[in-house]
Image 1 (cartoon, rainbow, N blue to C red):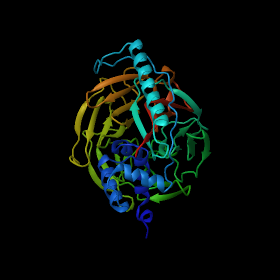
Image 2: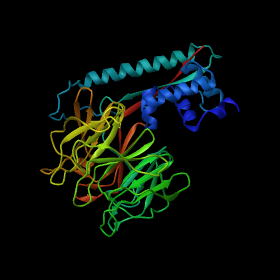
Image 3: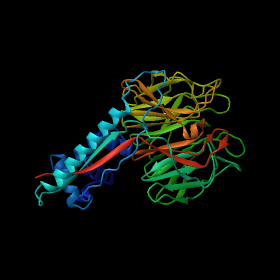
Image 4: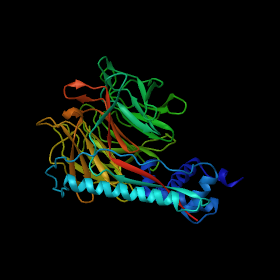
Length: 434
């Protein structure tokens, strides 16, 4: 058996990302795993291919043909000059002139690096791609990308590679079994195999080559415990072990290769339990509790913690954010803070070191904004929703440099639009090493 055959598919995937210059944290973000898991994989990879540094590992990947040497030009984007602040915190503001000067200096510096790399280096020196990922200075405004084939809300969804899978949900004609797939690279739509059990308000997450869709409400108006798995490669559905409870409005996430589902309600009781299922899909296990019972809330993984955002407790909306480490405090969560306003039927996403809280309903007034929160310093930035309207029961995923938001109720109408918001910039430069 040669060296390449000894590497698993996951190890090869990680090695490719190492060769592009990503850090452990950036690899973890791309693959939806923890930085510690990346570290363990790298230790095994180094031992298998007999290298001791990331540079040697990168050159090995180039030699195998897994990564092409070269670079992509820097793309310029217009940044939003000013966004309002929430009462959460008052971060320092930089003047538009100063931001512009910083941008010019930064681009000049990048241009100098490219010039020196291309003109002063030895032509025979091996080229290793260096990738730098940074947050945007200010989030761009939402940009309309496309329209879904059918307007809908309360759907399950997941991002796999460069594609967004939109499953079930409620359309103008009722609850559907449709599976619509949007390729963010080709910008083309396709239709997947229809879900055997049509549902709305179900929860979907991708793990082990499958999108697991759990619970929800059927066209008959019944809350279900049915779980079904969509095989992305084979375009087919298969049964998964049913949940121990019937639940709708729950939130789900993947952590260390396991599918987790928490909260939700059955039409009478709001739950706090968290259940998990391993890839073998043979059993559901009790994996702790939320700080309080909640449904229709957001969930995100960020810096090896799971954040639970807002939601509804059976009588009204919630304004809190709590977090849970499945490593150290599996049976209890920690209160993180308050959003200063209740939000439910929202989505939340973690990107690098930021938590994005998108849309949601409020008991008192329409919410026309979303939030960007830095958990480290508790600084909060407000981002206008698409069209400046209230937005809820939508879907949202993170892919590459963008957040994608789609469907839901936008103002008083059922939306079919797919929007994106740029939250990262990626600069790819050649670094010549002897």
